[in-house]
Length: 115
Length: 113
Image (tube, rainbow over all chains, first blue to last red):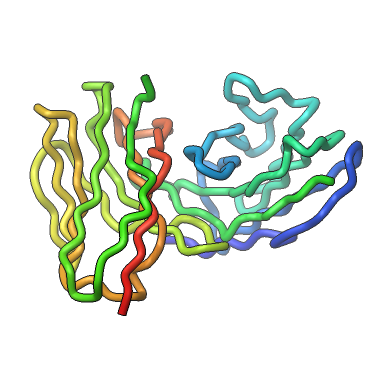
């Protein structure tokens, strides 16, 4: 498995501002992902963070709203831009280990509230 | 129709009970099945990983897959208050490279002392 940390663990933000969430893994991993978890709903994949290239976004998510960086094999950031109350959610990063199955290991999450 | 259906609960049981958590799915291509446990204000934690049909046991936990019925189960024996959490099923079509995981909504389990 892998040890994954996220910063911040929670934040309360004003409408129209942006928040950058950091994800750090204790070992090099091939795949890193960002999910959103809203109350009563499934985990929804936002995008796959690709090292050294642009992230791959799922349907319904765009780079202008959720820019992602992955400068190396152990670190990624997700920015939630121009926030509205509808962006209030838990944001989770996950990793898939090199040479492993497609099981994913999750970070503790960032609880975001937008006022 | 959602690809993966899971009763949200809550499911309330007394300590020591046998718990059965279930998911149904519609995509017959799913071959890999996972159960995650998520405590309040924590990230999901991988509990069990199974391939195709059959059973897999790990301590008090047993994962069961019935592909003919498109139905998977997680059984918890001798349930403990520490098992109180939300249990999410997840599944994918393959195990090499990146295969998108499809999650259920999660079932909230409450085990009372």
